[in-house]
Image (tube, rainbow, N blue to C red; front, side):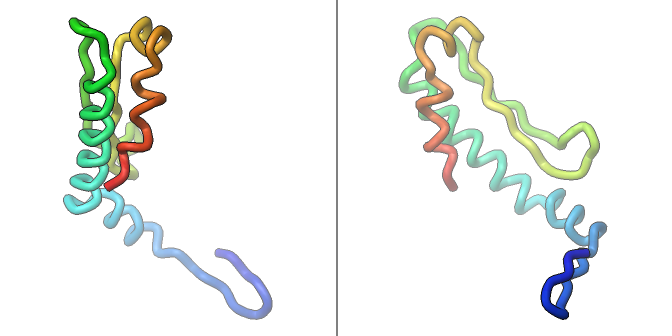
Length: 89
């Protein structure tokens, strides 16, 4: 609960968790990761892979997605660093 100048906001944790795990939010998270992966694929050297893994965080509190490339590819070419701006939805 946050208090400031006589007013406060009390979050409904269960409600927020429900929103963060909703199919709509999961779809937006996955779409953002796919956009970043598409941008990364445009810069990745031939033979290197770009993968998207989506699901929930370990705690199950929210949807998540991870874009991966081999560490050497990122170190040498920075494809994920260049692609992060494309994650917008």
